[in-house]
Length: 416
Image (cartoon, rainbow, N blue to C red; front, side):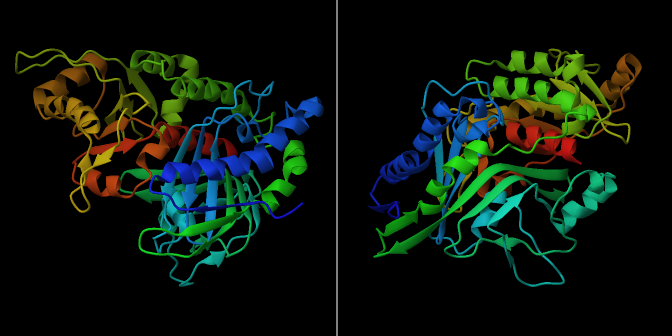
């Protein structure tokens, strides 16, 4: 086989570039994989379904690599009838930062080693926390011996060596801040070697090597995605997680349908594990005690181990506009995101009144003082820029997390 590659001049509309890349991957990898599985039908129930049943594909263009991340189910019973692909792409070609850290979203710093390490060509079940992430996991008493993993203490981050095809499967990266544990789950991420040449201020050409990817078709058809052992009691929770993923992946799902699902007894573990809480109180009607105002009804009050409750409010996974708008250094949240944040401000006002707090204690036996407001909205690819993190820092007592962050935080505990 000749060395397959895409070699296209960067057009004014980057969509054309991404389309040509996707066509190259389809011709050399997805389509051959599909045809192989059509012949070897016994493998359909065991191969990594996300390689063909794409919920979303995210393309990251760097200086030395093009990375493709897959979002989708780990298993399936049949090949997808439709081959349509939803694609989001991010261009880091002009960035001098670490592409892998850009994708993970965490900065890894070591006081012992002042440089990054080359990541192996293949990594499976990688568990890798930052120093802050490690401290938080120890505090949470996670079971580090529950699985084989690559682990580091006070370790630097990784970088992908030039000209090296690299694959990461079922990796979990952890960080922490004042709001708690941060989890980034990468189900499947391929780094394809890339070259940039004939570069000018406005255009450049890229060459992406698909040779290694094309050679893995038969291997990937026989590959079984790593999942928790079936004799683990947590394995029985995975079907509920899958149902939740199906809900958030359906554009017709409404907010009441999401919250109704999460408040069911068999599904409450998603919130208790996702927010590290011990009690979940859905849809409590809260009455004002000092003023004549309309009653309020937060989606969930979650009681933390310290005995005090925070607020979780759900919006839709499908965001209709860009999350961040405005020119460089003057960015702000879109009107859609700002509207969601504004809707939670009434909760802040309500709990500032000691009479309201006293009434909740007497009515529901819930302690609450100055609760943090969690807004669950959108998907990870809607918030891939670091800019939104800087913007949210200006908002007091509110944190935005994506539906993917919530799912990752739960599923990662199944492996610990």
